Image (cartoon, rainbow, N blue to C red; front, top):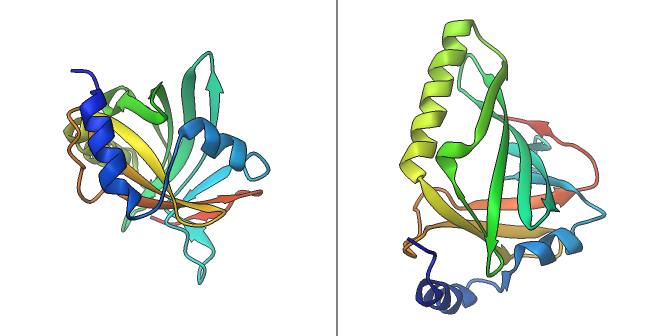
Length: 169
């Protein structure tokens, strides 16, 4: 099931109203002085729900990221995902993400949190992520299935920083 040209066209057209689509390689170029990608930045607490860096190596986008799962005990994860770049979208099977529960809680807490995260990723399955411009340093990342259906509840606003920002669950 290829991410079809028709799906891409309809995505690009429907998405234009809410901000221009920015191909992932262009996002990396635009944000090179600010390599830290912060999910759902909160100004009040100066925190993110995820913090990661991206690079393209031999045509593959590699994303290294940290995030926390809460409420209590809070477990911190490290993840690495590899994405194929298709027409400026970053596409991958979320099940193949490398995940490590780094810290927080007991071993059983970490196991339970891992199960929860794995289930969410398995439910998402094969997806393509597209970046849409919000401002000079901010983009909205939207996730779609390979057949072109938007995945609800996973849209994330990302802000790029020159320095790491603290995480919150």
